Amino acid sequence: MAFKYQHDLVTVADMSETEVLHKIKLAQLFKAGKRITLNRPVYAMNLFFENSTRTHTSFDMAERRLGMQVLQFDANASSVTKGETLEDTVKTIQAIGVDLAVIRHSENEYYNDLLKQNLDISIVNAGDGSGQHPSQSLLDMMTIYEEFGTFKDIKVSIIGDLNHSRVARSNMELLTRLGAKVAFAGPNQWYDDKFAKYGAHLTVDEVVQDSDVVMLLRVQKERLGDELNDFDEGKYHQKYGLTKERYATMKENSIIMHPAPVNRGVEIDSNLVESDKSRIFKQMENGMYMRMVILTDVMVAKGIVNKTDLLGVD
Image 1 (tube, rainbow, N blue to C red):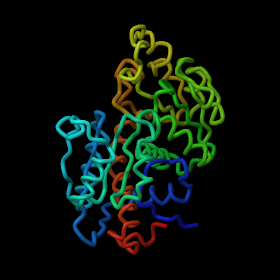
Image 2: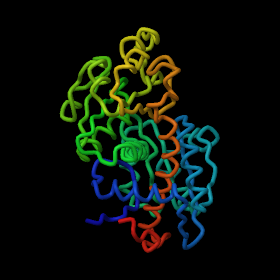
Image 3: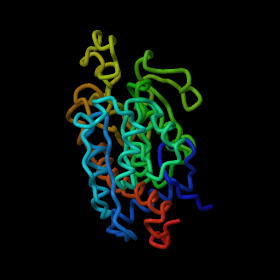
């Protein structure tokens, strides 16, 4: 069954299996060299109110490879420092002709107020607080699908700083909808009972040995507050990290994933970041192609790209 192209992409909450597989297939075609045609000049702006390397540069590269014109934005040099609201900032760039805003913001669900405005400019969520990270989730789905060719009954463990992680929230929702089996591990204080409907909370040793995908999460020191005073990187690594000893117990065909940036020697032994089982840099490569897809599908909804350009994808 075909899906309806959306004017905005802010969450994976209602994303169907059909849409996910469409996006993976199109990303693979972009990876193989596919090109699309824009019906007119298209202007994008990436509004990042939190620091980012991978997501920011990945969207920037995706926009340029699609032939979009990218306007620069620096939050620290913008009118936000004078008290301008996010809504007024977005309305301002819409007024000067920007078609699409990619936004990362520290406020959970910042996009809700924007979507209520029925703006002409499209909103793509590049991460909201500890809420959603749809583009990361989709690139993760692509990486898993390329490895296993299916999601059904694939065992995925999500390990670490669960409560602060938008990656964990997006992935547990999408993975379970696609038929994967999710389990969690990590410090009890970073686990919430609301995760229970998606999978069991087990020990790190249990999930590492049983998983097809060992998905590690960055310890988000910037969100820990007073907890950071008692945080010991070495103790965390030994108790919850992927050590060389735990790596040796992994299944033969299992893989390691991490949204990055990686705290080497904390979530994962530094020597394992580029090990045979690691797909961490493959995720980054896939991320650029998946973000090309996200932008393309939004432009189809806006009539900027003809749906016939995507014949054979659906």
